[in-house]
Length: 141
Image 1 (cartoon, one colour):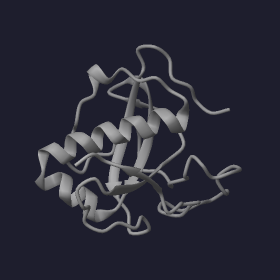
Image 2: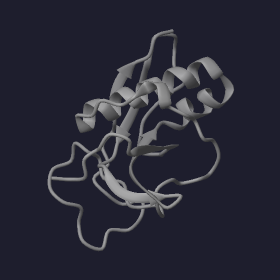
Image 3: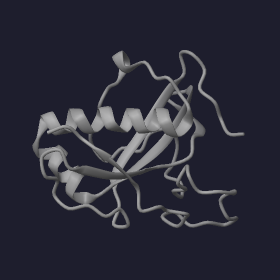
């Protein structure tokens, strides 16, 4: 059993591209590949929080940087995937996007896909882990 969300507790989703997530520039209505990590507890600004990471294909991160409409769709997709992956019901009215190279809720940690079985190996290096190719989700055009 991992950390669980409590009402009023902030959840951070650190999203970035990763070379192990396949993805080509998206056609309208095409798929977006992504992988969501396990939940972890931490603090942000002195407050208890939860965090998870989302690894995406570089092409999709670059498209989101160019297209505000796609960025909003991608954020909605990430929230949906986090809810499904961790059996959470999130308040979508409080979703905010913080851009830039900032990692929320503690120092960067090794990525372990939420769908991977077992515990992370001892002594794992950052960037190592049980990374999946990612789940494909259709994003509306």
